[in-house]
Length: 270
Image 1 (tube, rainbow, N blue to C red):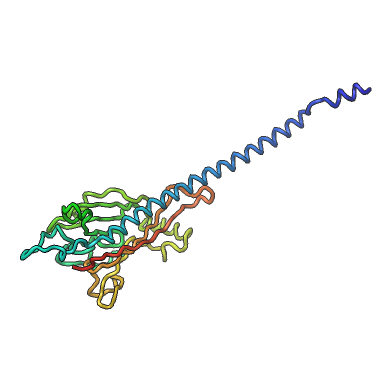
Image 2 (cartoon, rainbow, N blue to C red):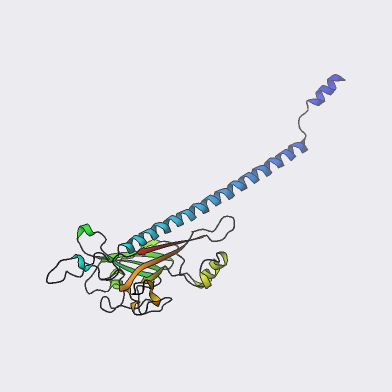
């Protein structure tokens, strides 16, 4: 009798117990792998947002540096007597314009207003400066332009009697990707619903906003009256709204970052 009881106590798990254990193990593995997959997708999304943020920040810093160096060197730095130095050796103005540069400055507007056909505008800026003063090889035109959600950069030497927009137009290279400041109305409405503080009124957000010198102090160029001109620009405010290349892994919504910066020219008017 004791032998029979001892034999029964050494029996293994029943089939039902094995099935229950297998089901529990499978559920645990499924949950673990699901959490791991979500964590991996979240990491990839955050990495892409970080990369977009860094790319936009580097681009913003470069634009600010360009504006800070605009208008240099001024004509007053040269001592050509009695003649004036060649116009390609000095900066006539911090911000070049089109058309009719350099004799007839245009008026800066917003949303297509003003008389500046190409630049300066909400999404187009041409800076006049000597990129490398130590080389003494003349002044360059550095241009930033937004088209098809890509902020491109162009740089060329200043051409005496030339049009800055035409001259720089052949040298564009992509600079910052997925810039959404002036995307389609449908996308702006989508972004505005997710980020209510972006795109006020559901309108495009200018990348470039300009402050002009006046005898009464700096004012937004669009309200500076007769001083609303690229030659009077003292500050350029920059706003970049950049979208991450993929949607958020959990919410499945787009991710945007908005960056702000300001460049100040030390040589506002010649």
